[in-house]
Amino acid sequence: MADLVWLHEDALRRTHPVFSAAASGARAVFVWDNSYLDAALIGLKRRMFIYETLAGLDMDILAGTADKVIATLVAEAYVTRLFVPATPNPAFHALLSSVRSNCPDLEISVIEDTSFVALGEPPDLKRFFRYWNKAKKHAMRHGGVLA
Image (cartoon, rainbow, N blue to C red; front, side, top):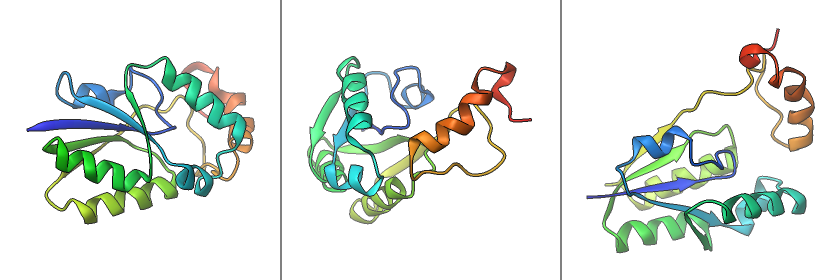
């Protein structure tokens, strides 16, 4: 039985609870999927930030179509459990649905994290800048709660 951690751009840190949920020594990967990054409206500057952050983490960065890369890893490494950080991103949810379809025997756990800021409404995912303009006003408050 092998565990795999599939990290995405909303959880770029080794202290995310997804790493505690998986077995010690589980392989961690980030799949660099340009079609997904395009669908998620992630621009060049944010891609550069993502790559630079990943370069400082101890994990594999794999290129390709994410759902196919994950399905291949599952088959080749006899992965039985996949751990994924939670995200509100619909483009990532579509990829995860595809993985579920391609790997019906795979146990998938979506691991929640404590948000650093609580917004009163769902975030605007079209542009990170719009989200950050709302979140930054409250991110440094005690508890990060939007009043």
